[in-house]
Image (cartoon, rainbow, N blue to C red; front, top):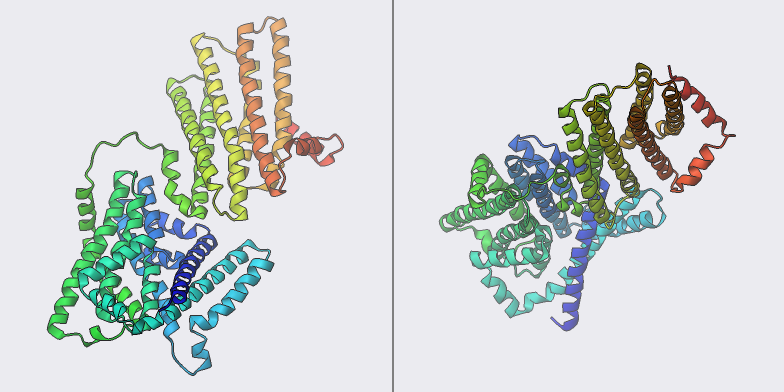
Length: 586
């Protein structure tokens, strides 16, 4: 094997690994986080957990990625450790699909149709289609599909290059001598584990082993121990992701390790024990790609079958290894949802960000509505609730802001990029609305402590503007959560009406003050409340305008509002009149 053959082998390996990475990324983008959402909604049924774990891994083509996601779910409290055990077992089965696809390269037949099933036959077609989609398709979904096709074609080209480059090694005695060493089960396992730990993908390391099979020098006595080691080596990714995680997340990573170590140990004892008695003749035969796939699947199915009934035992073993100890500073609800591990799957990380933003919106709404209810009767428990919700909103704003900045550096779809922009623009408004809720609560507290009461007339007027604010909050929050463009157009007219109501309430208070029906002190409190309500409406307007502007790929808010509010805008003026009739002052 000369220098240029070595270069071809290294180049082939590079293309193979890159193709697998590109294909996996494309599959993740096409799934749009749906696969991860399937895992998130998992039940405690062990068989269902195994099935879903296998399905998700088969789709995203990476057991390491699935296991890292599971560690993130457990760390976030989304998934229990008992649920994670079945998913991890299923992930090990799902990852074998790659070796079966690669094994198709060994198909031999004179039939044209059977030959077309060989990856080397259909991958050039996929490459052409993939390039066509990437260059000419306008749909982002088609571009992602093109990425998958192209990634697979690059992967297969790399596999073919590796196979061609290593073929001459069959005549190199030193190479066959090294492989013979690996027929020792312990050395073979160590080699497989090290290779997989370095490249962090059991699918890729099995593919490399399949490529080496073309030399004819890889016997089953060599291949089987390496395959067993590869399953242990793939645990490294999950173990690394668990660093700094909560104890249950570390336990999930340990479950993955124990599953593979115990499964490998049992398989070694049973398989090599039977071999001593029955003397399996195939062990000395040269392995092929299909045989590697069979061995890979057989081990993982065997390990799952024998260990699934003892899944609670694996859980207890992990708990014994990672013992209970006092938690450090407890994670906030926001930090739990926005686990950094999810950033490896941007589509799912974006879904988690949407969920966090919706919870933030609900918390700010709850703070506001609770504060408004206190204007009629002050309650200390409700005052504490408002403060707690406002603190919760602050935590969400801090967590979301930093998380979305990191997420923005990832490769996102156009839809996800737009949602990211919307959330970044709106979280500040949600936070300010919760601040105004605290201001309203403090005004209610002042009224209570100073034993002040508004006149019946002032209370009735306050109810009208409060109802208008409740309505604008409900509409704008619904617009944010469900991206309702038509509903967004109702917000600005209502915001204008709230401005009018605020001015009218202040004018009426001045008249009552002159007539001696109200005091200056009451007037200050009333002014504080109506000012807060008017500013809340402004923030609701910001939210609605943001949704409208993103839909139109524009962020010139001032220009938009100036255009909408022009006196010659008949549609807007009509909406204003209709809205004004809904909030008559007594």
